[in-house]
Length: 234
View (cartoon, helix red, strand yellow):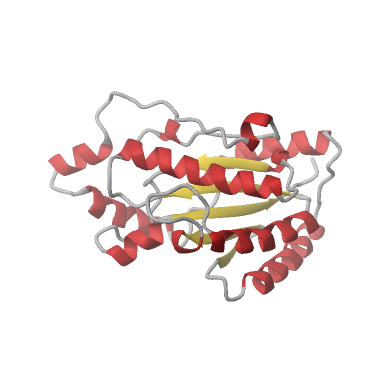
């Protein structure tokens, strides 16, 4: 299994460092990588990625895990943010999903509902130039619409997760995914979203949604996902 310590929590609150675009690099293990072992067994890294993609489905979903999400929810409720309970959660997310679908129409952003969570799949084409972590002009308009919705529906957490294809080294892809996720988070903060609501991760090449054997598949894998989670009363 590839080193899951790469999934580094980059930022959790508003700070000077965060607004300046501060990034973490994460630690890297000296143990043999899974892809190297797979290649010794006759399976390429891109073939392995295709298998992973077929297993996980359309979107990776939350990378932070239930424990981290629950800890953040408790902290926000304790800080007076409030929270949702019972049937109110479903209604709240129904309304937010409807608003997001209306505002994301024609942008190229996919809105995916999974239970009470909503994921926005933002492909590289509308967020970054190839091999860059600087937001492009098209991204600003899209993220402005996202921020408008997130301010309106403020009883939610947002996980911002960057993803890459498998071209290049694993370490490079990890850094690029972190930087891209951070760039999106920083912009959302500049548009009035509290940093306390954001959980920022770089997933590197670990969660493909398509085969890395083709350019079309690699383009799908280069993305940022925003997963919106209701804050539950505890």
